Amino acid sequence: MNRAPVIVHPPSTGGRRVTLYGQDLGRARRTGDVAAFLRRAGFPMSTFVWDDTGVFEWREGGPEIWSMP
Image (tube, rainbow, N blue to C red; front, side, top):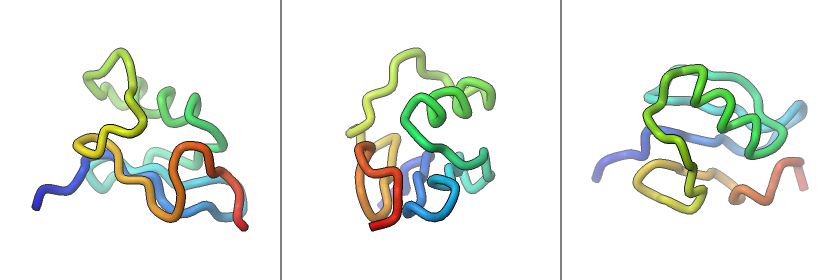
């Protein structure tokens, strides 16, 4: 099974850590932050489909979850 290149890690203090192919891109507080990180990293997508499991793996909550329970 291939792993999605973008991992949005579980919510924690300060947002959710975002990695691209294992490289830490930063902490996001919303989907706009994830998109900005990926664009800066040169990720080849102009439009992001947040539920595309071939691209994104959302751990402990999807794109609507940004804070700890």
